[in-house]
Amino acid sequence: MLKIVKILAATLCLFAFVGRAQATCVGGTNGTVQTLSNLLTQEFQDGQAAGSITPACMRDLIATLGQGNIGMEVDFFMFGLPSASAVLSKAFSRTTVVPSGAAIKCVAIAGATASTTVTLSKVTSGSSTSVGTAVFAASGSAYETCTPTWSSSVTFSPGDLITATFPASPDATAANINISIPALQ
Picture 1: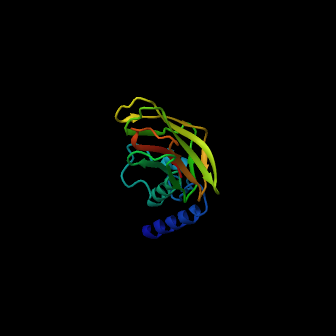
Picture 2: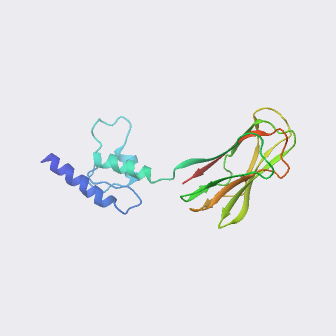
Picture 3: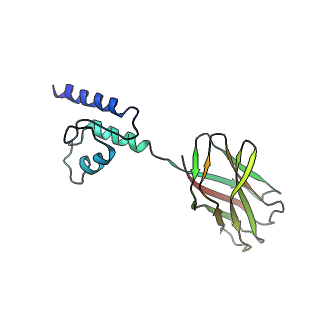
């Protein structure tokens, strides 16, 4: 009989979950439909007895957490010395957002001897808009980092590109450049 009740509770939980933005489950501590907030504040407590969380509630929690934004990195790597106006690009197959003030990281393994600006752009249907830069100072040091800028939060739709365009007059020494841009999908 207990197995039938658990199967019924799991089935009700599944039907309650389909089409909802929040996870819900039936059969929690008070037998009512549970929201994610309730699951986290009532069902999942430190020091809780093993086995006291229903499988339905655990499944719903995992499913809801999986619906959140997924962090990712948009990485570019230019091997060797970039040619004049070299362009690296990445196409998006899912809606992707790079937030304002994104913690962009970049490094040139062989540093620049003249200030070098890499322009970061969004390309939609062939139309390019500058959204940021990565500026390498004229230090010439190995493993030189850049000073990045990012205009504001930028949303890339499926089919859009992000490009990194190197200067028309490339630096003679800046080489093996990596740019990493955090984003959410």
